[in-house]
Image 1 (spheres, protein in one colour):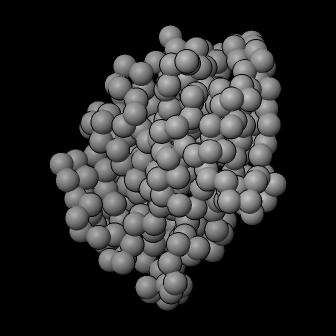
Image 2 (cartoon, protein in one colour):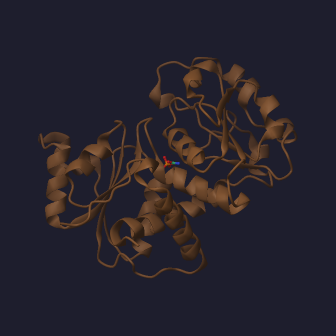
Image 3 (tube, helix red, strand yellow):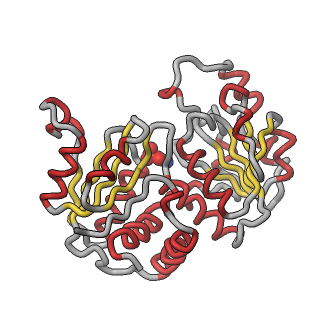
Length: 300
Ligand code: CP
């Protein structure tokens, strides 16, 4: 039996394991690592749309020499023939798959698979619960920019309550001793988020001069029925534009997990801003996922 090592959320990684993955990402960035997953069978199972996570996992697997199979939900017996996801996972394990990368609109779905699968399961985003590989690439991007994150201040702005990206990133930043400020309207930001080094603020303009990095979030309309405030009110209070960029320090950076919605959480001036790091995040997404897959399959 293979060593079961999965990533459902960042808490599955001990501090030294997180450091190891980030250090390996550095190595892989400097020189291509070769076929570390030579012949390892990886299945990507995306039950929900994805551009960045899906394509970057595929590229990471291919660059490491894995055998890659993309299992489309509509083609699985699970869809219409009464097979459970647990039995699907047992079947894929018997076939020789070692890695399952799973995105699903139900929180906890990847964990259910990990409990029965004889191999490694990576949560590629489950509902509003967790998105640990996005958090890894965000943390890598922040560390590349600032070195240690201890005492640095990162504001996360927008629809935090529905954001799996925010939930995983908050955990990661907390572990790395960064200060986190959550900014948004009441309905997107319950006050019980506050904890040591995590504060909740409503006034975006007041926060801007104090931060090292800003993480913008998309409003996740697919996860709620009606918008709690009007789009116009949201834009007036929380959209990042040229005036708000001018309030930030010259060294501050702006990040977004994507997909971003122009006109809502940002306007086009942000895409021209010197500190806009979206493309850097996307690029790091491939390398971080290579480092993660190598760690899960090969250990240290
Ligand atoms: N950031 C992110 O998860 O994007 P996708 O939904 O395109 O994978």
